[in-house]
Length: 308
Ligand SMILES: NC(=O)c1ccc[n+]([C@@H]2O[C@H](COP(=O)([O-])OP(=O)(O)OC[C@H]3O[C@@H](n4cnc5c(N)ncnc54)[C@H](OP(=O)(O)O)[C@@H]3O)[C@@H](O)[C@H]2O)c1
Image 1 (cartoon, rainbow, N blue to C red):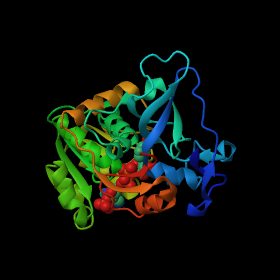
Image 2 (cartoon, rainbow, N blue to C red):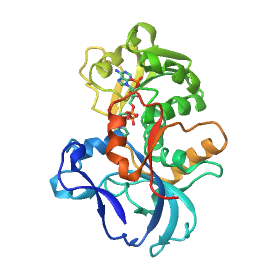
Image 3 (tube, protein in one colour):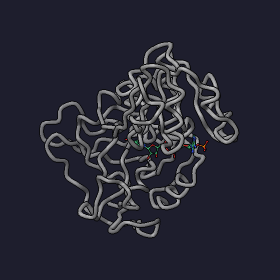
Image 4 (cartoon, rainbow, N blue to C red):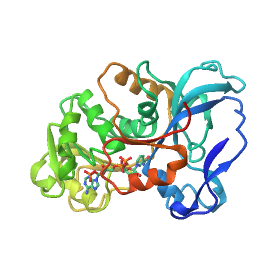
């Protein structure tokens, strides 16, 4: 099968289309014939050697961490899925940009009826991340005030919609040209991070979801009220910051979970959450796709077409 492999860390030049063996599913695993696969910032961070969990000893590897396709084969002990099922999943740090991927059955969910393949491929990693940020780490509750930094990207566009589904009042930041998209997602207030200071607008918030880090994260403490939470996908918030007293901060890494993805799929099937795909590329164009994502201002997700 074809796979996009890296044999060393570096820029786009280290990505190669290689012919490799179709993997065999082990006990508890499913072999998925991919139709579309999603791409994420973590893919270029892995490629560049900037992702702490992937060091030299993990190379060579196939990039890509989320897939959507049809069950081809099931490993020993798998009874929940059968060949022909339409499925999607977030996967570990190896194996997504390929014609077939091995996936633990417990990480898989069924693609909802009516959801097209490009959209399905864009859901798992960003969906889990935004859900776990809001629900597990943010402990979001109805009526709370939530600020989401980077509300238009892969994770952010789900976070805005999930927070609305949970009954929160949602403010989110984006660049000037992206404000109409933020409004389309349903935010109560779209904040232009180029011309406005979010800390002048948000006071006594319950939760901040930080998808940006750095100075944006440090300035976020001051928008939280007593007991407020700062949840980051990037770096651990500084608990010794002068404005952190009486508030909590955490940084987390998203986990794949089939049951959670099924719950997210239900929200999509019910029409409560939309998946936005900014652009699709062919599998062989993975380099260009990652450049497109890394250059920013993507609304929603970028995905790769693997097979019909
Ligand atoms: N810890 C984990 O498990 C985990 C999981 C998923 C993602 N992540 C990380 O979380 C981050 C977001 O992921 P993603 O997939 O959503 O990335 P993405 O699709 O590239 O989106 C990033 C968004 O950030 C916005 N942005 C850039 N600078 C900003 C600023 N100063 N203030 C507010 N918004 C700004 C951009 O919007 P504009 O066009 O408006 O500039 C862009 O749409 C990435 O760094 C990723 O690696 C971590």
